Amino acid sequence: MSSSTSVDRPAARRGNPWLALIAVSFGLLMVQLDGSVVAIANPVIGKDLGADTAELQWVTNSYLLALAASMILGGRLGDRFGRRLYYLVGVGGFVVTSVAIGLAGSIEGVILFRALQGLCGGILMPNTLGILRAVFPPKKFGLAVGVWGMVSAVSTSLGPIAGGLLVEHVDWSWVFYINAPIGVVALVFSTAVLAESRNSTGHQRFDIAGVVLLAAGLLALVLGIVKGETWGWTSAGTLGSIALGLALLAVFCRYETRQEHPLLPMRLFRDRSLTTGAVMTLLNFFVMLGGIFFIMLYLQNVRGYTPVEAGISTLPMSIASLFASPIGSQLTARFGPRVTIPLGLVLSAAAMFSMLTWTVDSSYATMWPPYVALGLGVGVVLPATAAAIIGNAPVEDGGVASGLQSTMLQIGGALGTSVLVTVIAGKVGSSLFGELTGAGVPASLAHGLEKAADAVTMGIAPVSSDMPARIRAAVVEGSGQAFVGGLHAAVTVTGILCLIGAVAAVAGVKGRTQETEDDEEAAVAVAAH
Image (tube, rainbow, N blue to C red; front, side, top):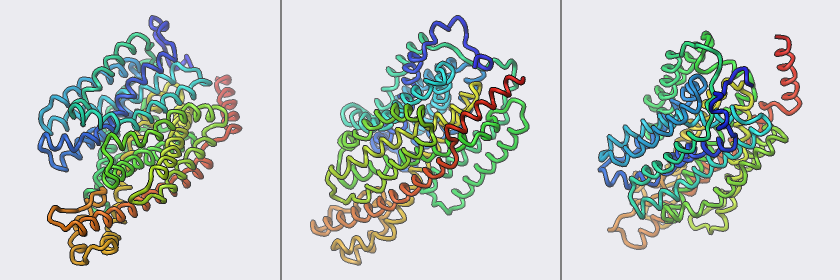
């Protein structure tokens, strides 16, 4: 381990692994909280700054695109020049851009600084796990990743609660200002306790062309994914953007195989456990962020919960994640990710299929069991996939492996929200007329309301003040039924994907016996040299 990664001697006294875990948790908290908290603030931002729907989408998308495009670069910078240094740079930049967003005063300024905020998040995020990989011994790394996963899952789940409280009782700008005190604590504490670590491989030419190809490819791919529902999945813009992204990524992969010091070493993908872990990371956050998205639509727009009530009602998910990640890391340490990844995905599948019982007026008793199962499933899979990816990468590539995991996480979240909204929209579009007439809406009016299918896809009933009370009630009932039908289609698709993923994980992740044999072969190879 020491042959490939160096720790600066003057800072060695500060290299306590558990203090390092606390330090990186502050940065992780900021990034994950900001990813989910903004959804609550967007409507108020639009009203305050006079933004239209397309501009509000870019408040979210600019952050997501910059974050996804910079993760692997951030990991490689940390591996080469210092993981502590680039973690601190990322935290400081995140604080400055967060304050700038609140002070921007225009929607264009918010979008610009959100992109810069995402870039800073992409620099700090991969170095959190890169730091842990460098300071924790292999036997305890799984437990550290479990705590890391717990912070990540709980931060994402608590975002709607924090966002609702700040928007309702303070101001939308405080959704971003709240990062300032967290970031200052992170900077002071991290400066005091983190030891520097970097690769000790001497001078290397930095792969500028690889950076450009990877960033451009990821930007085009993620743009096509996040805009697919808006542009239409078969539109020239969507297909062209996704095709361009895939083509650029293919060129990037080919180019990297010919570089002496590549940005993303293709040799990492020779390990099937690492490759499978990356795909399962994508699936896990497809389920998590996609699920949270349509659950919040159901609670707020169909059931009429306030943002705070919706956030509080999903607390069982957060609490389950709180316990699941450390437990998952312990199970992974004992049985390996080949067991724990399928276990978590089966729990997530059970959560999805149990939502098929939800109706427009379901009691809370039918809601909390799926929340618990989803929190457990996502929480168990997160440390297991991290162990499969980062645990199977050489220590000198810890930062870039973490960047790979973080990139797959962001792409999975983008796919989850975009694809599942499309599934819901397709079901709503085919069933809305029948649900409206079945609820008592006259056929002539129901035909006219079909034009409002986009609103119903978000759980919003297209009622107007001039409708008679009886008709208005029927429109609300029929729209709610159509949305719930779409939700059932989305959870069915997601549940099936989880089961397919569980089978793929069993086939693709090495078991304990194979891992032991590989370790022995590696030891023999090292001894031979």
